[in-house]
Length: 176
Length: 176
Image 1 (cartoon, rainbow over the protein chains, first blue to last red):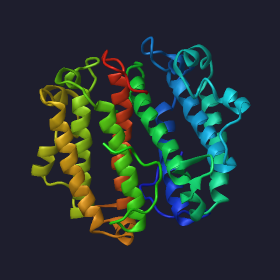
Image 2: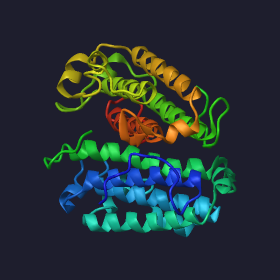
Image 3: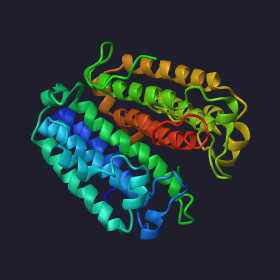
Image 4: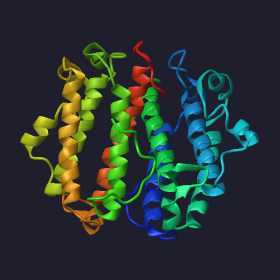
């Protein structure tokens, strides 16, 4: 994994404001992957307590949120009930997540994240800064700039929880 | 508290890219304040386990990180040892934080956060987009855009932990 960049600035292949946003998305993802590096299936499935989400479930959630916002921003519509069904229970987490989101190795979650991210970057590369800040047809109170920041923000929120949970696994702890 | 905006776009009083960044800072702060609303001193001081930071200590940390980056970006130098002393133990957290960062009501932390934020917004309003993306004299691998995103990112990371901790206090839980 290349070291994360500590600059936010326009990036080749994207219009300037989209490039800065992509810098945020890439940084967030690198820190998430660093936070889970080397975890075993048992560690990914570990439940800190009865109402906790496992680290694996949080990774599935991060990928599902990204898929959901691809729909709202790129397809400009809410997910269909079939798409929504595919994204659940990772979107909602909780009891169903604890029951279903388990028994997968780290590679599974990393693959899900990479596949989602590939489509996000393709979608953002094909659009421009005017699109980024127009209200979304599927959610007019929001623009795509906020929507994609929110995807990173939700990921960072859960990465904070992943670091906290990992520090209590007994495996080498990452900083909180 | 006004409802958070779900748009990132230029804001009056700031150059365009700084305005979008201020939107991120404001959104992160509103969600942090929402996550701690109504907490008592006992809840702010509660330690989930022996290596946990209290919610109060995490709020102190968020304000201290903001103060530290004001120095690096606006004064273009690292904190002096006296400044660093003032910011510790909130910057480092851990054992010293558990010992010292306690016995304060929510208003204390909110005031610290507001005072730090006021100076941040003043500093950003007085600067422009060219400044934002130039390498920092005090940290040349970084630009101010990344530095201020990182302040929001660190806050969001700890807000994720605050939500997790609050959900286990027995008080009305916020969403993870």
